[in-house]
Amino acid sequence: MSMITSYEKPQDLDAATRLLAEPGAALLGGGARIVPDTPAGVTGLIDLGGLKLGSVVESKGALHLGSGLKLRELVARRDCDGLFAEAALVTAPSLNLRNQMTLGGEAAWRSPTGDIQELHTALLAADAVVHRHGDEPRTFGEYLPAEARTGIITAIEIPLSPDRSYRFAAIEAARGARPSLALAMALTRTEGRFANCRIAVSVPGQPATRLIAVEQVLEALSASAIDTDTLIAALPDLSAFACEIRRQWITVLIIRFLADLTGEASDEV
Image (cartoon, rainbow, N blue to C red; front, top):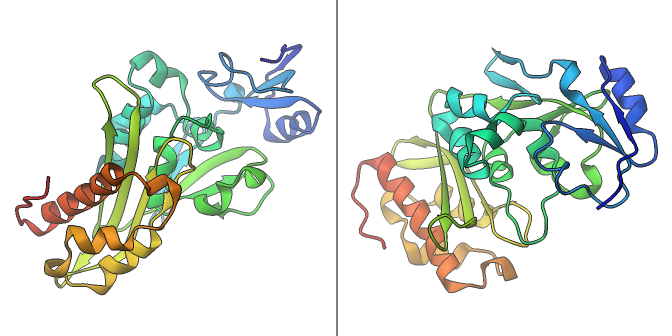
């Protein structure tokens, strides 16, 4: 853990950006992550609390969530069928943590190797767009690589569609334990088929990732033709999915979500 030698609370984004350019500087959102586990090399904190970045604006078919929005407020809003609310509840099980953690802080935080980031999974599935001060907007997928996570996030943009359905689920190995798997889905159902499918998953030791091959399977087949074996065959051949139980859970969660949408019972276990 590094020794913090300076603390600043700028009142405008330009000042915050100048301070961030200093060696050893790091941003402080709610403080729930960086204060107890300060990354190596960080010697100065820039508190974003004075910038009033917690606004919520809905316009032109998109929802703009300010980066300073507390997870407590995200839970209360229940946007996108509760996608972000459910992810926030798993990320921060206690009200104290939800009062501290911010949307921007969780989006930017580089998780320890053995942890997963539930909100990253939800943001990927929702086609979120990251807005940063003085920079061009990027999709969350473009922003996610460590080398791209620079600058100050001002807002997260979520495209909205009245026909879109969302789902978030997390699997715990034991009651009260941190999740071993998080999965988020978004899709549109039309005329017995699924369109614009987005499926994102996160497991320990791996960044959140989209299951593009599975998305393509869902879009290519009719709803009645989708089964567990078809989905398992489409899962990528990555070490993150080498565990058979994990692969089974991913497919079961997808099948259950599709069954809810179509009104058909699922006997998958």
